[in-house]
Image (cartoon, rainbow, N blue to C red; front, side, top):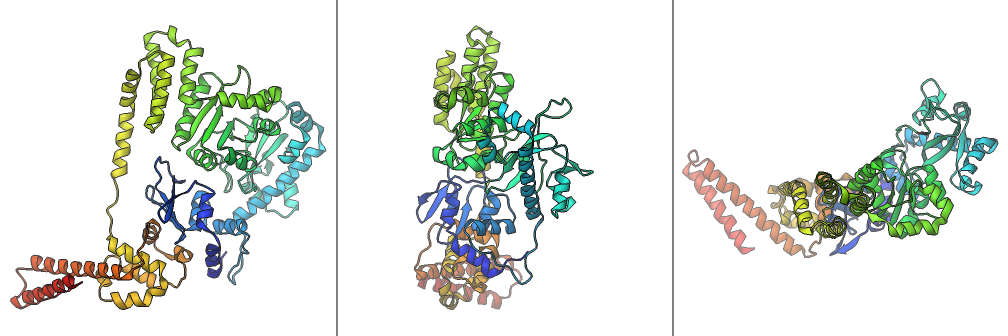
Amino acid sequence: MAFSPEFINELKSMINIEDLIGEYVKLERAGSRLRALCPFHSEKTPSFYVNPDSGLFHCFGCKASGDVISFVEKIENLDFNEAVKFLAEKYNIPVKYTSEGYDKSEKDAIFEVLAEAQKYYEENLKKGSKPFEYLASRGITEETIEFLKLGYAPESGVLNYLLNRGFERSIIEKAGLTVSGGIDRFRRRVMFPIFNLFDKVVGFGGRIIEKNDSAPKYLNSPSTPVFEKKSLLYGLNYTNDHIRQKAFIILVAGYMDFASLFQNGVFEVAAALGTAFTERHAKLIRRFASKVFLSFDADEAGLKAAIRSFEILVNEGLFVYAIDLPQGEDPDGYVSKYGKESFYILLEAASEIPIFLTKYFVNKENFHSKSLREKLESIKLILETVSKVEDRVRQGYYIREISSMLDVPEKNLLSELESLSFKSRDSHFQARHDSKKEIFSQEEKALLCFLAFNPEKKSEIERELTGYVEVLPSFQYYKKLMKLEYSVIGHVAHELPEELRIILSAVDSVTSDFRVISKGIRRLSIKKQIEKINEKLQTFSDSLTDEEKNMLLQQKLKLQKAFHTL
């Protein structure tokens, strides 16, 4: 496919980069720019900046930079064409193609076949009594079934249904609906369609309703061009606005837990897709919430899962709590029995993971009656969890609570924590200071930014600085900007070299006084020329004739006079 250049420029001109990025991260004013915690890497201090004037963003930490299109590409894991279509659809901007027209991509075809399969499964649920009986036995109402678009996969049929509607066999298989040989992947299962945040079906989760020891209870779609379990949470398309409003999310283990909580009015919820939490899950959650509530069984496996999830989530700056459900209860059963008010009371009583872990050892493991060796092992596990938190104030809070519960002096716990934390802090310090040496001077950056943001001044700039800029390292970028035709630099950002985009997006403010910039560039250029003369005189002193040396010295003297008159 090929979008017209005019359309791309129009698209960028109609989208406010501050509004777009503000939907993903919390922006705060910092001079003429806006800043936030970077959505592309873990950090505790904001290093991600947005420049509304240029329409560009830049992160000083991970070096991500670009315009509205490249931001969407990166944060939504889309290619350029998909990002353009996403923005056009989001802002209701008609797409315009070149004369070659539009070729439907493989992903487009997969989205279409998945949407049609969802309709097929949904219609099949209405035909059979067994799926309804199963869902009713789990307390799921017809209203919830209809809202979540639940369906049923019979023994076979989806392949022929889709083939009869003109879909290619290869696309049906690539969508994960069949396995090799044309056999339906999902058979005799209640179907939970999985949507992305744009309400497009990307895959399915199937729950078997008849006992079968040879088949898994739950079966998810395989990885496809549009489906990755490690970057999706079930139900988030329905609940993200509620989660954003309350700034917390309840993470449950599966589809039925989600359906039950949602049906009972607990809307700040999403479910994992049968996989361990990943960094991509954590980044996704951070877009909507600052607090995470986890529900785990109070046993050794549950503790390990809680600690593993905490380490991933806390690295994204999230506060992670454990819901202490009564023995033998799960979120589905609890909210069905006692209602949402009782469930929210459990949330209010929830403890952050390090405190929850300590309570577990005190109350469930009878910590105070253990041997010294066992106590030390438990303390080490607790402190290793605390050490994953970089915020020293938070660490101090945890240590005070843990000290009180374990009856161990704070100073002893802090000493042990310090030894655990030292290595990771030292590594972080080294990495943070291992930065690349800057190539361009501040004067050159000021010129590039002034030129980029004031294209109407090109003639004046060229007239004033010809003969000076040619010797500077930034000259290639200067030429690039001079050749480009634009009114707003952000509209042509995709045509700029990456390093130039970084310079333009990282700038805080640019003086509007060209005389100051011109003087700085002239002085810098003269200094560069003097340095070259000195280098020649030193390097070739033995081979230069007296006449050549005198000529170079005269040039140097002339340049020095020019420098001091500026």
